[in-house]
Length: 223
Image (cartoon, rainbow, N blue to C red; front, side, top):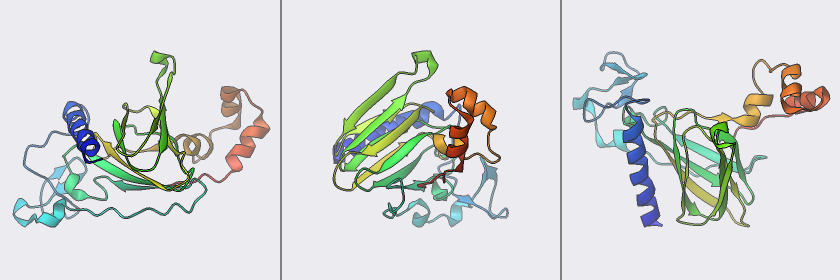
């Protein structure tokens, strides 16, 4: 497993370096620990930089807690982006821990600003993504076991499903310090305000009653 984690981290760093000039800023200093106090430094990509002379080792440390999977999706995503871990500021990377109950699902979603590298730490997952119409919306899927690594290309619709009888854990690494996430069902049927029923009915070729039913369902967030 250690080898697989190492490979995923190397891939993440390579992705980060390739995307940095186009999306996240390239750092012009060793580090830029984010702070909210305007008196402590310069504003860089949404954050102020902490005075380098005041930076300590704990600014580069973060402990990820196990997530609570007691929800209808049976999964919990613990984000570690620049918003939770200011030490990531300007470094162009971030990560998530995903916990899954048996048959728990991280539902179809996209990360609008990042490619994702998924590493299975425990359990057995089915992972998949759908390519764009440039590739005829092809569906790619793979069963992953402990130590396996799978990549979701930039902004592709993707999911992970625990297909085992036991709990599972995965680590996702991203090529952005703030990858963002749009869960498809929540965006389509739970937007604020709601997308007009006429639009969705015509787009999905179903009745307006069915769209109205789906819009009334509670949209769950496992983040």
